[in-house]
Length: 542
Image (cartoon, rainbow, N blue to C red):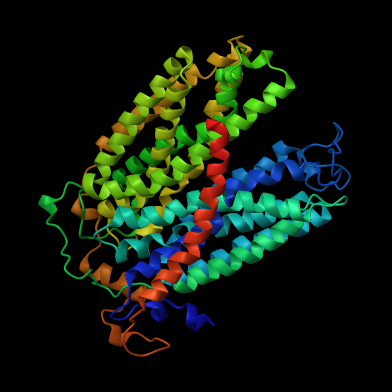
């Protein structure tokens, strides 16, 4: 079995169609992207024992007691710790095992990711059955979080090597899948919970089991679909652009991952990602309440503030806000592909300049749009902001490849994702605590987000300055020819297909029908997810 997973076994021979690799990456990212949609489980899990109504824990039951209690239901705030763990573990596991991934290859990393992510869901299902929250933390939070990190970075280096002519587009396709995972998983989970719900169960345990099995099939198919190119492979008819003719600062040399902690440009790009994500992730978590509190009854044609609405009206504007959240998710996903592809033309540095300048203008315009009562301008600003939030994730792997080379870009990307883990704490804290602080001062609900928007503009200014300071590396940071050769030896790279040990012989020619089937396998679920999301978006426009 280990031979099947070895990197030497997945080096593609002549005739292999590189367009088979993106759907393999999408198959994994569409599954692990459900991490974004886990909040769909919080409400039913908060009444897992009571079924209809939650059995509330007494004041004597603190957080640690709640991990082991079997006599009362979990609070939603407690369940939310799983979401936090997802992204903390994503960053730390990607940073810790990124170097191993480069040497082991994407197939082995993909298999480990599938086992961790899906196995973690099964452990969580056991935790739900036994009503032991610590098992859910261990399963989906820790083990699943490790699978999340490995799965997220597993295709990055491979796609960049297969598409040296379209680095941004290639990574944009895969990372678009991560953003789209919840778009498929959330409605699927809702349908499954509805199917399995009974007078004695909320249906979450069974849903976890079914989704774990479905995800395992897709992720294993994706892992076994990974192939890596021979060293020195180039697309037919393509030659690397001369350094002086490029506006993207693309190096032809390579940096070892163990050196990046000491390189100023790494920390500048770390800050670029951290500031871009902090500004966006805080808004994502508060998008629904923000729209409701700012516009209140005007969302349904009623002249009344949020605090003056009755229960029926509150339910109506909540439906509208859910459509707004769905609309943002579409722009988040589409922005990953659009901006990353555009970066192939603009250059990575200029693309981030657009993110920070245009994003700053959009955030600055929000208080004015709110004061003017313009829902269209308010929503439009956040749609553009969320497209650039997603675009920042999708563009940064190509940015790293341009600056640090492609040899260890997956491992370097893994270390950079610690910026995401930091932003996952910083962004929500700024938005949520500023809101509470403003409310405590007696500021009306429709104005509590104004100061927050200006703080987020400040974050983007910091990101812009860091981005403008990024320069090509000093040659001292690059590996020597001898060091590069040793690293390639450790990574089991070969120079020719004749040296590769494969299960078959001859060329790797692939039928166009196989490529079409691979794309359909990931395309059909994605289209279904978009359809379900558009149904929610329709409620906003209605």
